Length: 251
Image (cartoon, rainbow, N blue to C red):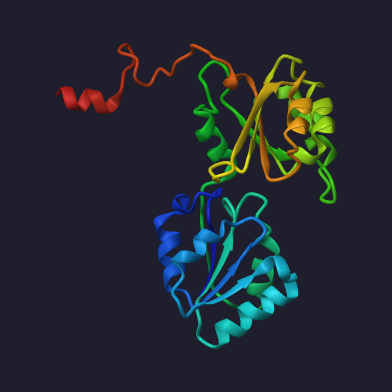
């Protein structure tokens, strides 16, 4: 079996228990060495074959998977964060299906959730925002025109922007099409890693702050009023809120 495993944002303890157990059992480990914390490899058994996919192209990765599968070996393909978000697993899955090879996807903690955690913020604050937009700025990977930042910014929802900090000036310029210039922004470099850096500001000053820290990769950009010190609360635990579970308990 081939397993696509989300390793989480960086902290090796933020991998799921299921992901860790599969890594412990697999004969072959293929990990995204440029992004995955190498501490994850401590879960592999001593005799496991370990390969860094940063040094391989797609054909080489698939060839290794197919060869290992034919030899009766289980393969752990380890991706950073959660494989479903910018994980580049689609093209691998297509090739495995062409080879009639079974696979399973194990979810992981995405970096946008890790960034919210280290900021100690809720992304969906009642009456402030109930929508989270996950996106990126266009580059070598094109973005459909209707999904460009300047278009999405008009919703003024919480926004988590991946793979874009190297274009921070352009990001800010496009976001100002919809958000107010005073909208708060947080940039979290390598969330949950030992060398994590947090930069906060507004659309007016975040670009200069980020550049002064030398951050140009591996960072999450979070935008929205959820970052403010707001006093707006959920109705879930309001004493006046009718809750079916509490009703049953009171019977």
